[in-house]
Length: 147
Figure 1 (spheres, rainbow, N blue to C red):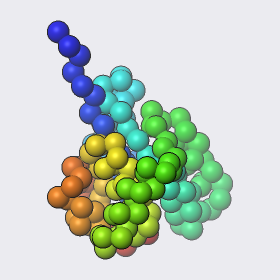
Figure 2 (figure 1 turned 135 degrees about the vertical axis):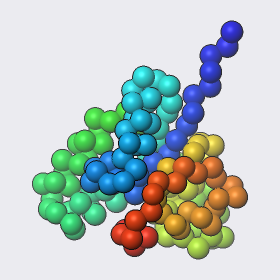
Figure 3 (figure 1 turned 90 degrees about the horizontal axis):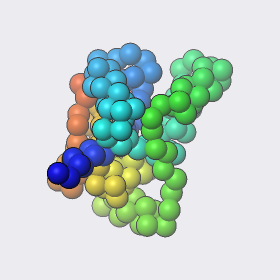
């Protein structure tokens, strides 16, 4: 018998902030992280996501909390992906053809490149629903204008 293939996920910044700020949808993120800890799935984030968590936390709270949140991310079962030339091309194509921010283009590009399920609560990703599988968390008023 062959092993079951691992599910792959990419967490958008809104998904990580759902966990960090204990928002609606947290149980979904906790479940995915538990499965990643048990090596039942793989979870990726873009370096851009780490940057967004830091600056959003610094703007909303302060630098100390922002640093703590990066440390929290470092201790999660996440694979942090840096930008490569191939990934840059994928991101560039999305940014050139879809109405989304640069950061969201980076995150969507990572999901596309990894053939992963994009986990988010950001309506901006609706423009790539036809090419990227998505797991939508409950939207809230702030998530539409989070960044």
